[in-house]
Length: 199
Ligand SMILES: C[S@@+](CC[C@H](N)C(=O)[O-])C[C@H]1O[C@@H](n2cnc3c(N)ncnc32)[C@H](O)[C@@H]1O
Image (tube, rainbow, N blue to C red; front, side, top):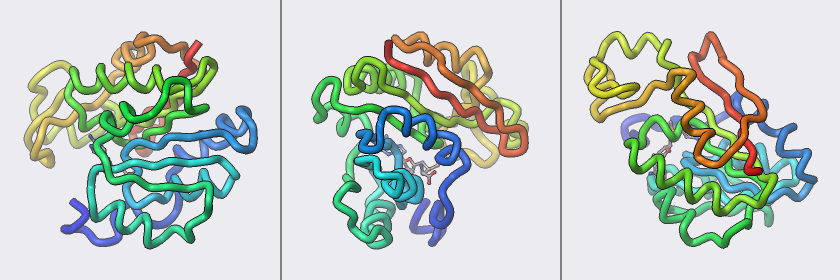
């Protein structure tokens, strides 16, 4: 993906990062944030600019290489080339004030997502936030494909099965040990923004 499209996910921080930053700020100026699927790091840099201590992870080597090249190496921002769940498993329990994932969970199969959520829950401190943005099932790209399992589409623009979330599927993610703090539907982008909390 990154080799085919130079400059992908570079530039301005996502709208979701702007929605999330004031929520994370409530945890304090030095909040510890783990970003999963960070790409070339636009959101990680934006969150680190707020003074948070950000550790950002992606499994794509070109993305992490760009992230490292683009960041001016502030001491409060680190990048790791790793698969998301493997990276989570290396972290201690209760280590983070927030786990943040923009446009990652759509790519994960059911079982993998469930296991990943268990790890997210473990690495968050009680009261810590789980912030994630995912594509909604209203996305017109679903029409070009075929729903092969509940919420999972294949074909059209998707080479691999891809998930589009209905509102009740978001509730399933929250039921993995979290409570819902906020949810927003971004109509023009066809994205869900979710902020959950570990009780
Ligand atoms: C749609 S991109 C979004 C990138 C970034 N969050 C942004 O908005 O700029 C999804 C990212 O997740 C990464 N990714 C997908 N599956 C992953 C996994 N299992 N572990 C780590 N990263 C993953 C991809 O390499 C890609 O960089």
